[in-house]
Image (cartoon, rainbow, N blue to C red; front, side):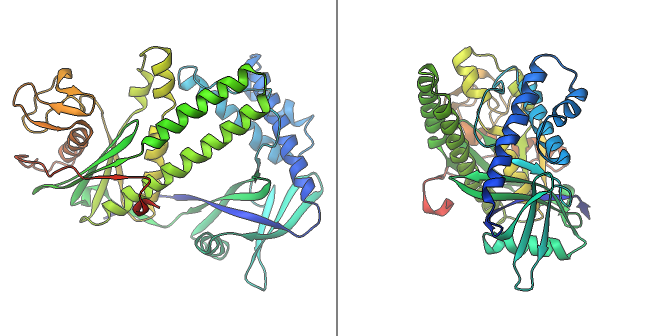
Length: 401
C-alpha cells in the first residue's frame, strides 16, 4: 500500500539575460526590499494584517501579484517571530536587494526553446519584462523540462534574486503523482536525534539494532557563534550594510551544510530494507526552552527543524516515509533497562544509574526514538542486549560532499 502525497522541490538556476535590461531586474529587487520593509513597519505599528497587502500595493512599483507575494513572505517572517518566543525580530530598516517573488504565469513564465533550453520571462516592473534562458545543473534542468511537459508536475512560485552579483531564479515544482510508501509497510525504522553539533542515527528492525552512525558537524555551531560575534561588533559600530551581508553569508553556509547532512542521512538509510525515518517533534520542546538569554539564543536559532525538513523532502523523493514521535525522555531513558533519570546523561556521556549501561548519549537517544516509533507501528520491540560500536563521520569528510 502506498500513501500518495505532493512532493515539492526547489530548483536553483542562473539567469542568462538576453534582453539587455538586467539592471531592471536589480531595480525590482530594490523595490521588493522597500515593500518588505513597509510591510514589517506596518505590522509593528499594529495595522490589521489583512489590510496591509492592499495598502502596500497602492504605492509599490511592482506587478500587483508580485507585491502580494513579497508582503506574504514579510508577514510570514513576523508570524515566525511571534511563534518562536520573540527571537529574530524582522528589521524594517534594511537596504539592498530582496528576492522578487512571483507566481507562475502571472509574475513570470517559462517555456522550452527549439534548442532544448528553458526560456524565462520575468515581469520585473509593470509592463516591463526581463527575458533570457536558464542555466543550471543537468539534474535541475531535467526536472524542470519534465515539469513543463508533464501533467504530473506543477510549477509554482519562484524567486528572482542576486547572489554574489549574479542573477538567479529559484523555482518551486511539485510532483502531484509521485508516491511515498506507507510507513506501516516499513521493515526498518531509522531513529534520528538532531543535536547542536551532530545527528545520531540508529536503525531498528524486529530482529534488533541493525546499525548506528553519528554525523558530526561542529563547524555549524562554530560558524554561527563566529558570525554572531562579528555582527554584534559591526552593529555596534553602526555598519548595518556589513551586518546584512554577514547575515546572508551565515545563512548560506548553514544551509549548504544542512543539505549535505540531510543527503547523507537519506543515502545511509536507503541501504536498509524498507526504511522509515523518524524524528522527534521538536516544536513543543523549543517553545519550552528557557535557559537564560545566551543559551536561549543558541538553542532557538539552531536549525533543528530545517535539517528535519531537508531530510524529509529528500527522503520523499526516494519514496521513503518519515514520522514524528513525542521527544519526552528520549535523552534520559536507558535503552537497555528502561530506567529514566536526568542524571543518566552527562553531556555526550550516558551512564544508567540503575543497570550501569554506558553509551554515547546522542546515539542512545536515537535508539529510544526508534523504539518509540516501533511501538507506534505495533511491532514487537526486540530485546536490546547489546548495541553496535558507535561509528562517526564528519561533514568535512569527502563522503558527505
